[in-house]
Image 1 (tube, rainbow, N blue to C red):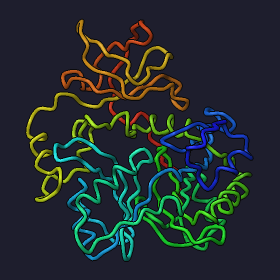
Image 2 (cartoon, rainbow, N blue to C red):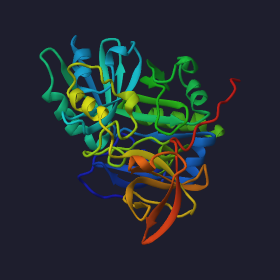
Image 3 (tube, helix red, strand yellow):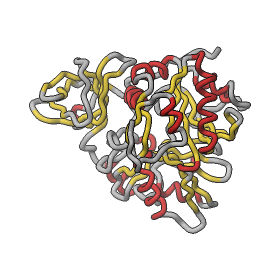
Length: 370
């Protein structure tokens, strides 16, 4: 258990201790890494449901009649395309096109909600304030609220027992204002695991009530609390980027394969000119998936070799519990980015064969409606 007095605690910190969670510092917060174990929690999300405390994620509200124009300028995606109660994945970039953070933008009836990575909250706020026009205000609500994610094939059914909302009709990447366990809540059909599910935002002082209600409601369906360890293996299987790994101060969204979330036609965006210039030139590297022949996992920083020289580097790697094989994401030279290329991964001085594959590694199976 972490004892660093300088770490922030989520509103569910006491609940994690009561469940015997292993806590570790993460992005300035004391966070649960695992409860029963990463493999068990990973399996629960893939086959039943897992419940995550993601209150460390930043929650920033944007108010003002010019909020749309403001977010259109500072983000890469087309904010004007958002309908009310719709969400989009987007990025904050510098004028040179490098990535400050990847974010989710939610359009609510009278304002916007921007969810950011915990490690980047302060510098995201600094970037937003740098470009903030008169008449638009920001409200960092991170410490006043809690954010939970319930993910897995039974997640929607579990939440449905605790709400008056018909959450089954809530579309992917949409948000609804409602209630869960008799508490006001924002319910968003988003997630970071490759499974269906919901992310819930509630007042900090109601977090334990909602957390416990979800655990009680989902017990018979196999719901388990899950920590950051399983969250990482799940998102890696789903080929989802993590800031500090696939996205950094030195990377841009185009080489990370996030072209779909970059609107190059925006005339006055902060990074627009740089991203258009990057898009017009050959990319020096591309993000790919790797499947290793060995079960030994490649870790971030592992070097890649082909034709007698270094051609890339691993950004994330793990032994994938669902796939029962070692996988990794990596940046490689474009000549080696096509699926089916053979590359050697160096792990602890030994080289192991790997094959490039198209991301993601895992897609959730389509399930027939009941």
